Amino acid sequence: MNLFSTPRMISLALAFFRFVKMFLGLVVLYLSVKYFGTSFERDSWVLSIALYGVIVCFLYNPINETFRTKYIFLKEENGEKHAVKSVNSLMNFFNITYLIIALLLFVAVGPITGVLAPGFDTPQREALSLMIFALIPYFIFQQQGNILVALLNTYDSYFYPELVSLLASLINILSIIFLSDKIGIYALVVATTLNGLILVSVLSHMLRKRVASFRLISLENLKLSKSFVMFSLPMYLSAFCVQMYLFVEKSMCTHFGEGAVSVYDYARQITNLPHIVFSSIVPIVMTPLLSKSFIAGNEDNFSDEMRRFMRLLLYFTLFIVVLFFVNGTQISYLLFSEQNDDFIHILSYLGLAVFCLVFSMISGQSLIARGCVTSYVVAMIVGNVVSIGLCFIFSRRVPLEYLSMFYLIGQTIASVILLFRVQLIRKNMLLKDLFFILVTAFLSFVVVYFAQKLFVGTPLLSNDKLYASLDLGICSVLLFFVILSSLMLFGGEERSMIINFITRIKKKKQ
Image (cartoon, rainbow, N blue to C red; front, top):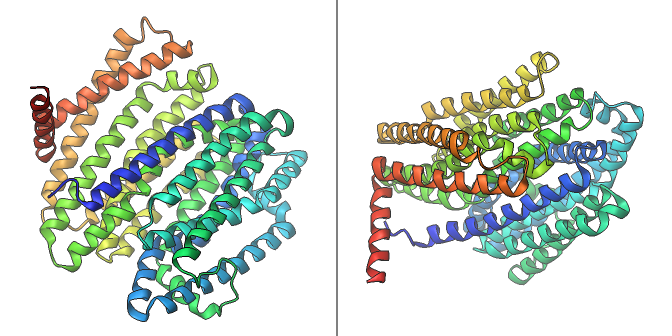
């Protein structure tokens, strides 16, 4: 197969944009630590964002994830005019739900903050309520932006939304630098509101050029939106369990004192970065390829494509996970200028969980491509229910870092279930791939850990940011060569690619 075919080029381009955004996200994270630290104000920001994250991901994400497929189907079956009218109806449905949610927040903000932050006292909950109200525009713009991006993707527009999103990250950086001293944490509120307004304005303008009848604010009959809602119904249970766990996680953190929510959130933001990169590639590129192979009855191609994506993404994830595990101290000094033991341990557990999360995402999308949504939903429900149960039972009896271990246990269980449920014509080859990846993970950890402890970490002091950066750089290079050596030893297709690449470089030099 041609490695530079259109889907692969799209995935590489999207990955590039996401890597740039990931870098800007790290800058935002560093500035957040510098200007807001682990203060109560930062805790309130994290909890408020978590609340809206639960609302968006539970109420809207199932529709967002299935929107592209359903819209294309409606357009093919009933024509573009009917499909756009259905989208306008869906936008009307969304606008009504925004109003209902805002009213519910105003009426029941007291009980909501009590559940969201049981460890806060009355003045702290009042401040949290104010933050929740201030972020209502962010919540509305976020969901509108999600659906606009999905609609643009159906017209093969992938890169403009990413460019606008990069602009939003730059606005975040500038807002923190220039407004933090004047309005404190509310600099982030201003930034997110402005980002959302720009994103929605630009994307809606782009859509109106492509689809003149599209309306962001519509009074279209709500009945037409039913097709989108019904198509996404199986995903709601999974979305509910995932977001319920994240809600419980943040809530339990409030029992560990001021700053605990922020410390946990900083670690989660860092470990979420690879997932953010891959979540834009897998559904847009891998799932359509697998779906076409399944519909055509080409099980060999289905198996090969799934394994290619799995190896590519898991080897990249492995690179990040090992750094999180070995260099947690250096990352802590870069962010906090000190060794924060809670952060280091949380980063380690969440880093390992990312490996399981990426595998679950790939396996889940392969099941969705076959129409086996139920298997994917069951696995995610079981994994998150286990994590929620462990949090409720043990959270007040164990240190903060154990919350991240409970998450790792749940994600591991979900991965194992999905491994058994994945349907491939040569599943033994998938198991062989996983075995070699795990062997590479073990070898990488051993080599980098002992090199860091015996050689790198001795001359380079972790409590110096320059030395910590050099330590991370040296370990990254060493890890790269360990993984490259492993690919040369265990890889099949990848080994051929590496050899061909090296051969081409030698020919050019000659």
